Structures are given as C-alpha cells and as structure tokens.
Image 1 (cartoon, each protein chain N blue to C red):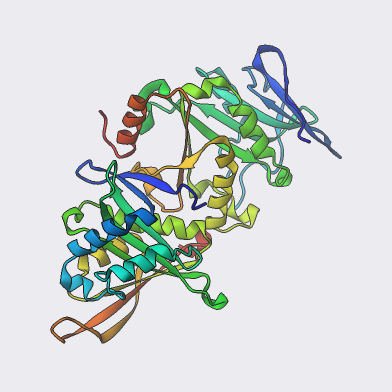
Image 2 (image 1 turned 135 degrees about the vertical axis):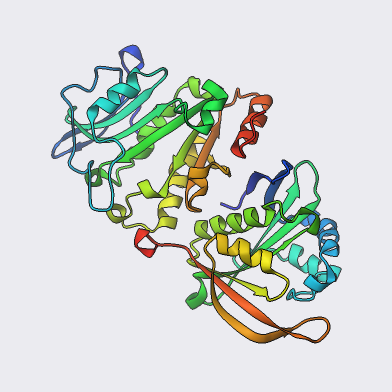
Amino acid sequence: MLKDYRKEIMIKDGTPVVIRLLAREDEQHMIEFFSRIPEDERWFLRDDVCDPEVLREWINNLDYQRVIPLVAVIEGENRIIANVRIHRRPAICLSHIAHLRISVDPEYRNQRLGTWMLLDAIKMAMNIGIEKLVAEFVSEGEEAAVHAAQKLDFFEQAVLKDYVKDKTGRYRNLIIMVKTLHRDWSDF
Amino acid sequence: MSPEPRTKSAGVKEMVIDETPDGELVVHANCPPGFFSGLRLEGGIGHFSHYSSIIQKLEVFDRVASSQDGRVCLALIDRKVVVGYVTGSYPDPTERWSKLGPLMYELATIEVSRNYRSKRLARTMVGLTLDDDFFEDKISYMNGFSWHWDLDGSGLTMSQYRRMMMRLLAPFGFTECYTNEPNIALREENLFMVRIGSRVSPEDLQKFRNLRFGIVR
C-alpha cells in the first residue's frame, strides 16, 4: 500500500504539488524546510528539528509500523513545503489510534495545503485500519490549524490548561482534538 | 484455474463461473440492447432498510447499452436472473468530467446481490468489462460514494469497505486520485479511482489533472 505512494494535488494558486513518503534523499530538504518554520512554532515541536541528527534519525530509521512520514513537494522540485507524521503506538490496546503532527511552510499557508495534508493523513489512516486520529495544538497561535482540523471533523476532546510553556516562559493551553473514523452511517 | 471467457457474436463475452443449486452462474460482458428482456433481478438487489441498489429496473441496462459506447456486464443465474452487474458509460453532461469529452469514461455501477457475494463476481465482471483495447484511449474512473455502500449487508466498516473497493480495482490499474469535485470531497472516505489508458497523451493527462481541481485549460 505504501509502495510508490504518491498523490497529486493542486493548491489554491494552481501550483502542482505531490504528496509522497519521506525519502532518504530528503535530508537536506527537510533541514531547509524546518529552517523556514518560525522559531516560535518550532519551539512547540516534540523534537529539535533544527538538529540535523534528529532529522537523520527520522530518515534513516524509517519504520512505517511506528511512523508514516509524508511530505508535500512542489512537483518537479524536491523542495518540501509541508510535512505530516502519523505516529502509531506499539501497544495493542492503542493500535487503533494514531497521532498527527503537521507543519506547513509559511510561504504556502492559506493555500489549502494544510487541509490537503490533513485529508491525506485521514485517508492514509483509514487505509491502515486506524479508528481514531489525535492532533494537538497550542493555544494562541495555531488557530488556523485548529480551524482546518474542525472542518475535517476533528472535535476538541480536552484542553490541558497552562500545559506548555512558550519561549518566554508563558504558559499556554494544549488543545487535544480527536477525529473518529466512522464505522458506519449510524455514527454520524 | 480461472475459466477463459468465450467471445460470442457482436463482442458479447461470457464466462461460466460456477454451478449453483439455482443453476449455472454465468457472467456476460458487453450485453447489447435488447439482451435484457425476460430477465429479472434477484432478491438481493433492490431496496433495503439502509441500502438501495443503484439500478433496480432492467430498463436502465437497456438504456446504458443503447448509449454511445455504453457497456453492461451481467452476472446471471440460469441465464435469466440478474445477481450482479457492472455498467460503464461516458459521464453525464452535467458532471465535471464531461468537460474532457470522450476522453473520460465512467465505470458507473458495480453491484453484486447480497445473496451472491464472496464469489469474486465483482472482480470477474470488472475484468471482463475492462478487457478491451477501447480503454487504452480513455481515462476511466469510478466514483466511490460511501452513501451507496452496503455496510449493513457486507458487515464492513466504512474504512473496510473503502479498502475493499480499492483492492477490487487496483489489479486493473486503478489508483485513488485526489480531487476537489464537490461530491467526492463531501466525505473523506469517498473514493475517486482512476485508470489512465496507455495511449492517453501527456497533454490530456495535464488537462485531467487541472480538471480534478476545477481548472479548465
């Protein structure tokens, strides 16, 4: 199913974009991609994505049973303009759940690219038998991402008040949103 | 070993699938207009509490078969009871895909009676329908709208049904493509499966790609 995975999309301004799996050749492009993500946003990521070692680890230890890493590139180039990682849990009791982490190049925001990435992640999740998708957002700064998730039927499941600290040491809420991949029509 | 299809007059192909207590199970592809009189639909095709068959009247088969390049493939018991069907036709003029004219061809319906599933009938019917050089000049597609899926009858979840449809069509060269076509985009589980014929030009492919995102050029 993942072999030759490639989805063509077109963003709002007509730029053709391809969504595909992260490849070994992407290391430098990933470094460049994350260098374009504002520092304030990188602060809240779980990994230090500016550390080339971290990205090398992501790329060299691909294990699709644990993480499915998808990137969006401009067609004909290898410039990465969005990244989504679908994290699966090894525990059997949590194997029906996946966590999403998504980043979009600031230059390509408001182009529905984030929405396409989310949609692609949802379809991928359906293809691999996931039943619930979880995405976390930090308050005061990720409203656009929250809005995109809401449009795709992610619902706010919990808000952890004053859970994370920003760069200045100020506490922010962590919003946990969950999407249930419907089993049948009665779920609606 | 799978039985070989026999080609009969006027391009009609038939393949004997099985002997059942109700009679011989045979798949007929490229059924011509007029083929359908005297047939009847088996009880597992029709209207149910959470599911309705897309085709419930035999006249529809005749209409499709009479249309330009329309194709009807039927699975018949005892040569008179319809237990499955596949139809193909050009897109309706009101559909987005009609903007590319006869380049686009829709695999419009695929259904097997609730009482005759798990016999690989759908696969056989799709295979016989597509076994034609005609499709090498076409972009064939199938809309998989989840509201047409028989979840109750199949006992499958949305995701499982979706995967079943993908597995059904993948061996024939179909892959899922993304589009912002409103009906497909309405539900994320909906499927737009596409097969690109080997003689489709790069220019037509580009037009198709544009059209998938609502751009006509």
